Structure formats: structure tokens, C-alpha cells
Image 1 (cartoon, helix red, strand yellow):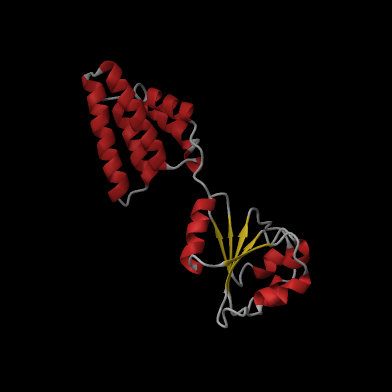
Image 2 (cartoon, rainbow, N blue to C red):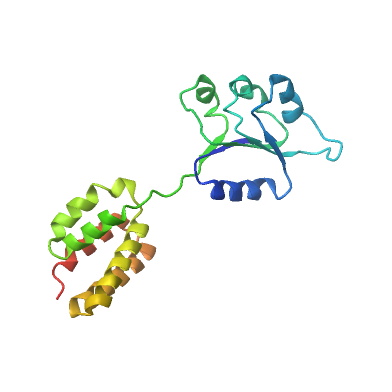
Length: 203
């Protein structure tokens, strides 16, 4: 088995590696490896373990000399994971192996622009339609649950400074939104948009 893990969320990647390889696995940095090293890594046995080895190879694909040989070792009897800082999908080797082994990307959630969330929330209190238009420009880059969490933070600040009827109603509406996001099968962004449309009419 060979799998390739890539992406910037190293915490999730390492967690998945431990699930697959266990806590005791070989770690090999590949910067200085040559083609001569590959048979021992992918086919060789150790004196301590006659069975399948568990191996983590770091930045294997960054070493072009050995990466081009990977196709010859897909039948390895060992459990092997390649942990890549970056994976170039334009290379001939990638195109050759991408359908022959599992490639998994671990991406950190996008960074939310707090100022943009603040602006959308403030506009929504006056003009829900305009707020939805603003939201649609960033929906593809954001996470609805994280976005809603920031809305809650802003609504709590509003309530602490004013404690009016509208501020209470907004918090109740956000509570319902949070519950629906966790339980409803409706597209989460539609739920957020519905909330933004409603709050301008709250009294």
C-alpha cells in the first residue's frame, strides 16, 4: 500500500498517519535518497520485522530523481505513506500515478476576514438583500459555521453595549441558525442568507 498525503494541515495529516501506521513507524527524509535506496525501502525487510513495514517518507516527490521511479514500486508489500509539503500535479509522474494510488489533501480552513464579517452583519441590520449580495462574493472562500461563529461574536458585542429588544431577537435568531446548521440538510449558506434577510426586520 502506498498513499500520498499533502496539504498545509499537518496536524490532521499526522493524525491520519498514526491511524494507518500506528505509533511505531519508520520515518525517512527523502532529500538525499537515490534510486539505489528504493529497493530496500519498498521491498526490503528489517532484521526485527519479517512482516510488512510501516514507513513514512517525507517530501519524496520533491526529489525528482526518485519520484520518477515510484511507479515501479506500487506493489510494495509494506504500508507506505508519502507526506508531501507540496505536490506538483503538472508532472508526468503525477499523471501516471494519480489513478493508481490514493492521494489525500489536508487543507486548513480558509482565514475569515473579520472586517468583512463585521461589515456584512452591520449592513444586514439595515438591508438584508445587500448583505446577502456581499456574502455571495465570499461564500466560496469561507466556511459557513466559522462565519456564523463570528456573527455570534459580533451580536454578543452589540447586546453588551445596547441590550435592546432587537439585539435579543438577533441572538435568538442566531441560536436557531446554529441549531439548523448542525441538523438541517439544507445548504448551510442558504440558512445563513435567510438569517441575514430576516434581521433587518427584527424589532
